[in-house]
Image (cartoon, rainbow, N blue to C red; front, side, top):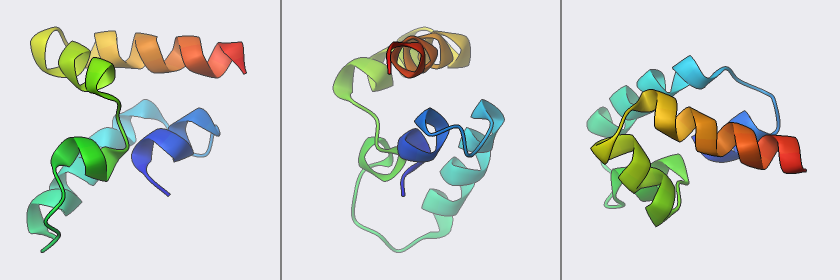
Length: 66
């Protein structure tokens, strides 16, 4: 499961994103970080252009809507 899937399922805390980013950096995968984390383009944009908090807010809204 990706970071996004696990976070939305309530299996991990948001702060785990840092561990996922580190693992991606050492993994020999050819996918992008966005793909590795399972983020949408909108979520990646919020994260990169705004902040961790902006991404968490988007994910939390989705989690609350389920």
